[in-house]
Image (cartoon, rainbow, N blue to C red; front, side):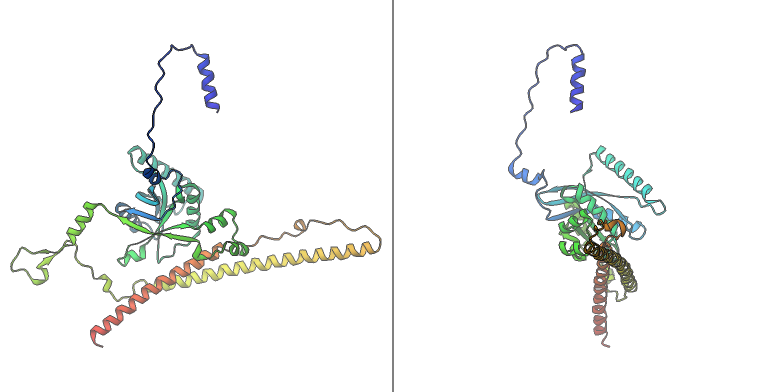
Length: 377
């Protein structure tokens, strides 16, 4: 209210202007009932589907291929209409390997603001609806992804989503895109920073209930779909004496990579499973050590309280005044119960690696049995 009062004071100090005709009040048409439901100003309609444009798929694939390892990540832009989150554009975020966390965070924030401002200047979509993250072998459970998605769900309409792209599946010819958001139970525990054993039990949290998957579909332009279909249709050669193998050609030749019986990535997958299990055992060892330390401190505090009660009972029996009660928390520093969030995330990684291993090994066994049957061995 400070700005209107200051403007009124300045207007009063100036000479009175000549009377001017009062402008007519603007009139607004009421939003139709059907459009009011689709627009969803109050974000009351829950998300039922995520729709990715073809250009977003292309950008994510390109960024994931050019980026180092699984560090490719960026922002998703679009709009939510009638329960469908339409992602129409995206842009990659820089990744800093050698800078410290604070410097890298400020640099990424400046780049993000600059990109959104530039998109707004050219009338492009500048509404952030989530982010995407590249992963390998389906293991996307990590603290960074959880923290970023938690921030988005607190600040964005409908909470935003995270699109996970598995580059290992893409390398085998299957582009993998999945949409997730954090569950309400996990968000409640995250806001309270309560990931103790009792907190996990009260919220019924496991690694499987951290994220909920949202159905995802891809939308392509009608002209683009027609063009791709035209490329896939075989065309007859104009030469009458053409070889039968090249009598019919296609701009998109068939791919036989799915028939490769080699165990591509199987060794790496086994290594990742073993490494994830080792990390989980290490984390469990740390949690067990802290739990024993807490138990020792609690035992010392309980022993001190019991001795003080016995001494006071003896003094009362002797007719003396009881000793004043002391704050046990000041005498004994009992550490808080360790968080089990990291253990849950590591279990999620083990589960993801195991499922990926099952998929690769199962497909490899089927191909080997088929090759054996066809060879007659």
